[in-house]
Length: 189
Image (cartoon, rainbow, N blue to C red):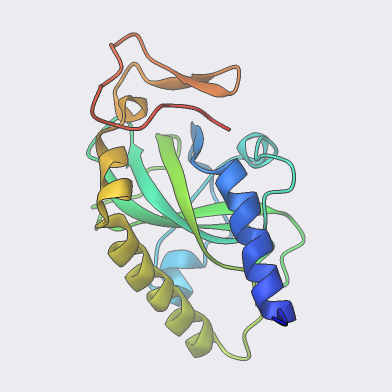
């Protein structure tokens, strides 16, 4: 007889939920966050407004995700995104904080941020020190880079959602351009 551990059960449950929720497409104006990403962590993040956070699918687990993102219909970059309440900082407001793996010359508050969330890295957790938090984020970035180089994820980099005409309408990706035949279907479910 096979005995399933609680940890294995949780991993399977999260995988099942993720297969129903991802990929998830999100877009919105970059708003000011808590101001800690660049200053304290050395990892600048772009924050979505509350209206975008509220549009996450019901039951989507809090945690760290990986995927692709762009700003103002520009170049598409690898990204990691945190969804939830940052336990280390004792946040009381749920947020979506995106780290695009690119060095930008200046802040881009007010710009349009688009992301496609493709995979789940880990749940939210508390950290005993700032160094431990930074180490976890650096590990998340490493995992994201590895995952996004896989062919199944790489195809999303050229998804029509990132084109100037790509947007979310009624919960699905809409574009005035023809859908590329070489990539996955575009849905928000």
